[in-house]
Image (cartoon, rainbow, N blue to C red; front, side, top):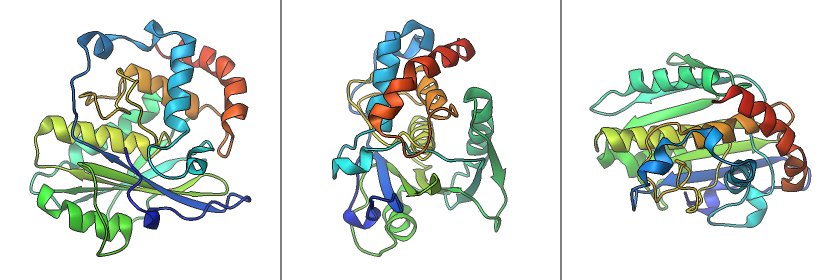
Length: 254
């Protein structure tokens, strides 16, 4: 994950007016251990899961630390639009993944809308050769600037929650890369914007090869979308209530 340029970030004022951030997924550098990939969320301690929440929901890999100072989440149902520009149409797989999320994350509502409908979250599917041009047009809003990573997600944040997200996912570099990019960028576009190299059971770590919605990450998203965790909370405010939130999450995730 990386913040690609200052053009991706709007100024965060004291009144929390608007903020735009972007995350990218790099090609995996090293495989995760089999043990880490197989463990269920119940195998992790409260301290490990709360630490994972703090590392992914707060902080940034690049750029000013102030952009990672608050909880970022959608305040209501999230509508997704899938725009296929690739030679291999991944619409069916992305639709299936998006529709599975409410059953895995309590408090998160999603739906897929058709072409021309208003959407909160746009997923653009491209071939690698069109990646840079698409990122510049749909993420940077400029024909200049770097387009880092293998895929990317951008989030716009306002006073009451995330206002929009866009993810650019590459389709033609194999099933594993597509699945990895789809999972990581859609999940990060919902709020956990940071990567951390210590989280070996997570897709929020560019050193792992996970391509599924891991139990560890399901716990993080479930904590984030618990109604007690509010958009705009500081790290200290969220940390104070995470133990009671996690206790309820554990009862829902086995």
